[in-house]
Length: 340
Image 1 (cartoon, rainbow, N blue to C red):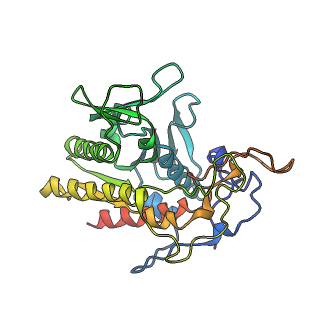
Image 2: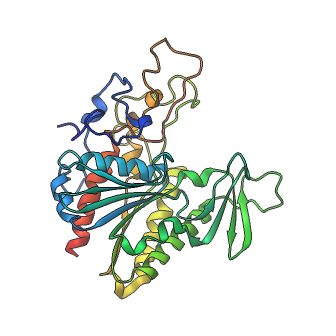
């Protein structure tokens, strides 16, 4: 049936993901749907979503994939109810914002927190690596936990960047830090520790009740250099069995799924109040190399022909696009949690 919105009917799409308005010529990627093996996945019903979140607040917390998912949700819900932007922290690339759907007194927020734990991001005026404090969450979102009914977490890609890791004030090691006298420890165990700290802190602070959903790692689809023509050229999904879930994509997903299960066991008898779930989108996203902006992260990139350098985005998703499926599944997960 195609998407609930397009590049002109939804005004909250981040410019770099508005593929239709930027002149992407093929639109077949909009008409594929995900069919789970053991259940029917209903079309996203924005009215049903608003009913579930009447007088409630859902917050998306994490990196730019969290923001991608948030903007998809706001666009789908805005097809039946106009959103009011009630909070923004400057014009900082949509990093901290909140929308209010007055028809149902429902609130939807985004909190930029690419590690979930406290972090100092690399900058032109500071260190050329990130610093992560693995024993404490990022209070930019943590301070608002009491006012959140459902929290959707999403991290992964920022852990690939050079970083120094600290725990209880002591340096554990680093990832790709030549020139610093630290032990190279990679990032897998660090991701696990960050997720564990996050889930345990939420459970401790919100034992009175909250839904916690961790969206699993979303693979990128670079087939060539990011700044060359044809970096992610596919216009159709992979066929069944054509692309295997393996390597880093599989490892990142495995860590996230395992930590959700471990946290669920850890809270024991409080599972009725603190409900934890993994939104497992890794494989279905892996099969969608056709859904990225590619060169259409910028308007009409080939208006003057194909240049020598063409910047491509093969990480984020076009809006509308495959990321809408994540929210289709999200709604069903929330319905199941509420029934439980």
